[in-house]
Length: 490
Image (cartoon, rainbow, N blue to C red; front, side):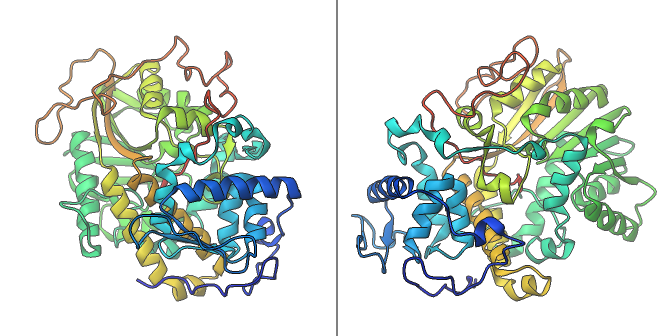
C-alpha cells in the first residue's frame, strides 16, 4: 500500500506547499477564523486530552511545545502538526469539522491514521473535560436546512456522494461494485477474498428474505446492481429503486449484459413514491441516508410494501443510542463533506420506529469486525490508485478527504463505536421463526440480551424528540459529543 506523499513540514502560519482551490474548497482554503481565546482553549483541551492517550504528538515548529511520547509501546500512532496555529484555530472555531478540514489542508498527519482515529474513538467520552461538555454548543453547528431529506433534498444529497463518478468507485471497490460491508469466511481479510465475501453477504440477505423462483422482490437502494443480479439469477422478479442517475445507468447496463433485463426493472425513484405489494423488500445500508425526520415514513413504507407474510431485510450501520441523540442535529465533518443529510441510527431507534409501523424484528445479527476489514481493503486500494484518482479530475484535497472518511469509518468499527447489523422484519403478530440460514433463531436483542424498548404511541424517538417529532438539542444529558460517522458507506 502506498500512502499520499508526506506534506512538507512548514513553520506556524506559513502557506501550504499544496495550494487549495478556494472555489472548490472554500472552508479549507480559508485560514481559520477563531479568536485568540478560543484557539488557546482548544490548544489546552486538545493537548491535555492527547497527553492522556497512547498518541505521540510532534510539533516541530511550535516553540511552546515539545514532542510528547506517552508511556507504553513504541509503535503508538503519531499526530504530527505541520501548522499548529491553524490546527488549533480550526478546532477552536469549528470543533471536529475543523479537525477534519485541518487534515484536508495538510496541517497535520499521522504515521497510522486508523490507529490514531481508533484511539480517539475509544476515548471519546474522555476527550473533553466534563465542565466544558455543556459548552459544546459554542463550537458544534446545527445541520443546514438544505440537507433535509425532502423529496428534492434527498435527490440532491444522494447525487453529492453517489454521482461523483462510477469510475472513482470502481477504483477501490471489488469487481461487483458492492459498496457495503462484506461478510468474510475468516479474518483478517485479503483483497482476493473481497468479491466472494460480498457475494456471501448478498446471498445471506437473500436467504433471510427467502428469495427464490417467482419471488416478487423490491430493493430500496440499487447500488450498482449486484444484489438485483443475484436475486434475478435465483428466478426472482426484481424491482430496484435508486436516486442516483449514475448508479441507475450502470446497473441497467450490467443487468442487460447479464441477460437478465426481462427480470429486473431499475427505476430512478424515491422509496416514498414507490407502490406495490412484494414478497420481500431488501434495503442494504440505505437507512443511514434517510434522516431521522423521515424514519417513520421509511418504516411505514416498508410495512405498506410487504405482501401478507412478506419479509423486510435490512443491512444497517448502527451506533449507541445516546451518541445518536447527541449527533442527530449536529453538523459533523461527515455530514458536511461525505454524506449530507445522513444519520446512523441506533438499534433502539430501529426497534422503536419499526414497531410503530407494525413490524417485528425477528432476526438481528452483527458483523462490525467484517466492516472494519472491508473498509481497510477499500482504503488501501484507494491509496494505491492515487494517480488514477487524479486522472479523473479529483485533486489532492479530495484524496485526503476520502482517505480520512474511509479511515474514520474503519476506526469507528475497530473501536466498536459503530456496528453493522442484518435484520429481518415481519408484520407484527404474524407467526414466523426468524431463523437464520443455519436454522438458528435470531436474538432480536441489543447484543447484551436486552430487548428493544419500543416506541411511544406516535412512533417518535424517545427523549430526543419533542411533541412534533423534532429531534431535541443534539446533545446527550451530559452534553457529550458524538461523531456520527458512517458509511453509510453509511
